[in-house]
Length: 351
Length: 269
Image (cartoon, rainbow over all chains, first blue to last red; front, side):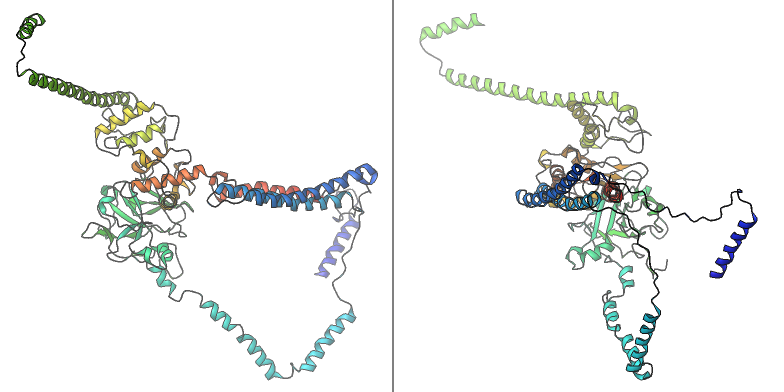
């Protein structure tokens, strides 16, 4: 590299010699060192009155800082947070923050103004120095290593060296095993593939858990649904994150039902997973007239009349449909779990 | 009559005796007169009320024919431009006309709220007319509109059923293809109730079996609470979350950082 550099350098010099001056070829692009700017005295150095004025300004900043800090304490006491009144929280935090900001910025602005207008302002240059140590230092360092090797005998005693390496390799293993065990003990693949819906589980209202009769669901209605018994589970939120369902009623003639799914709806009442197949946001923005279901996170749009087919946005698969029917008392129940995993793709998902 | 009656009265006085039936007949006459007058009065009152309803319906029909029929049809049967109004109920009319959405100025992705075009009595007449066409949801009872229900329950129901479109603070939000869920801050309790009950435009219906009238009252209480109490976090910036808050930080916070940096490195005069 260094040789090439000098080579091209000489080339330029050759050109320099060959071409007469005045043809516009730049011989060197190095910028001339302009040196220091001419010394320009500040007003506070020229005029003692201005000097005094700047001094007072700095003192004013520090004074404001004191007022701010004291004011913060005063505001905190005078405008306390009254439980149950959000307006008092707002006043309290606003005035406290204002006082603290004034306290801190007062010191900062004062210090900067002091340095800029009053402290000695001469220019100076400090050059970088090389990073290579002196030969004596390098020799000394090498000697320390040699001496260490000689005294400990690590280069000679192979048994000790190898067992030490072995001990160091084994040392972090307990940590890795313990941390790995923080992952769910059950197979996550199975957890992701199944929800708590099963044959005969009643559809109930979120959040009350009241079961829904087919006759309650009028045309144009939308119900936010959780499985019966969810509210009693200890891992309620984990289960809800998979099992949440949106229930809608359309005119049966508006539905385009594919083969094998004819019995999945009950007289135009349909249930779809509320978990977006893109990244798992809750899809619940249902438009009654267009029958479009919009995901608020990334605007994936599903057409409910065509079995929640994706008509816009980044989602790749339709929302899974929950097959439903009614029980002997007229309440809506699931026929089975979803026929495919709900929510976004994961590593082991086959399609 | 008086002439024929007076000689017989004089005769009776002259004899100094009254017929033994006189007091009984006086009692009967008095009772009949009072009862008859009362019956006449009440009958006329009923007739007046029903004629009032009839006149409201007929006034509503005239208003309908003049203002609504061009789209919804002379008999409210609907057309290719507008849906039928048979069975939508008084609540639907009160919401659509009472918020100025109807009569619509133009077709579009969504018919927006605008200045109300009719007086309260005209709206009531239109509602009475449409309600007379077929059974539908009625205008809500005032007991559910006080805003004094359970705010916490209302907030939970709002988050489950409404917040995905209307924003958790009721600030509204975008839907597909130019449609949007409107801001709920200045909407009256009656119109919020009617919107839940009837599902105007893109909004789904939340009937009384899905969200009970008491729970609707709780949701209204939550929205009333939001209107009355400022956001505890300071400036709400339209309650639009990271979009408006991020923009504010980029412009004002980073702007002042840049300004301070320029000041720090500038030479003092």
